[in-house]
Image (cartoon, rainbow, N blue to C red; front, side, top):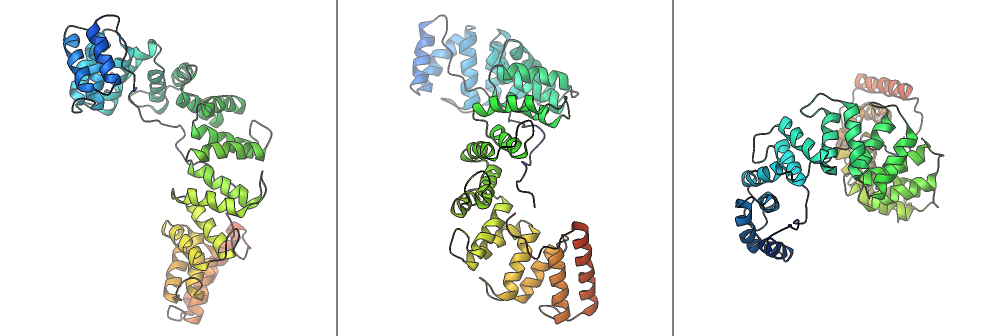
Length: 396
């Protein structure tokens, strides 16, 4: 098994196209506007609305934007995307970049308007040209994934770079991914690391994970398990379940840190709580073998069961063994056969062999030598295909 689980994700981190949560901008005129701003600061959006609506109707771009934002967010008024669009449009026409960006987001999602990527791109472009980093990022994303436009990776990189230079962590991360993968630009691990570090410095958990992965593999940097551990921990502390799993594995194996099964269990638990199947399986192994905790077959079976339900063949096999022997569960050879079959159908060599044994002995099934021979043949074929002669998997 691999030492570390590679992050399974789309080739690019596709952030939701979000609305900017701006503080209500201060005007260059009108005491009423300032009164509205003060009210909004106190959370009194009803008063803010009463102050801003007359100004918006008289053409104040900032008041128009703020009314749009209130309808967009449902602050002081019932959320109404159509009314948000109504007020954003005149503000955008007067050059308010944030109104242009928010209109782009609404057109992209089809909220309050008929969905139109063409109009979304138009409004993003207007905001981006005024230096709006979020609009620059979203334009880059649209060109990258071909959302409403033919993919154009040069333009994607251009807009990502402009956003990244304004410290947009998502753009920094996506640039890192582009340079790491080399699928759309010339592969360059050093540039990937540069952008990942900038994104990681802005608390982007995926960038932190990626740095851990690169240091673990020694790509673009000298292999350094301690440095990998550092970056995985930062990502794990932000809830990244794959980083949590990797930390558990490093502690269980003593990689880059002193071996500590107790800490391994803690990290595996956090990852398992986020449905990480390998963490569930490894917890089952640690409880069954009494490493870092008192041996407890019942708890081992519980963790194997969770992983087995998610289709993990090794967990299905281990749980089948427990039912066959009555370890931590009530002995039930029919359940054992069922679990062996689940794993065997996935090509698990030992489960196939166990099924053969059950058919030879009529254990949980009717005795059937032909069926036994079939499963023994499949087991041998699976072993040869995987060059697997290990008696039993342990930590993965």
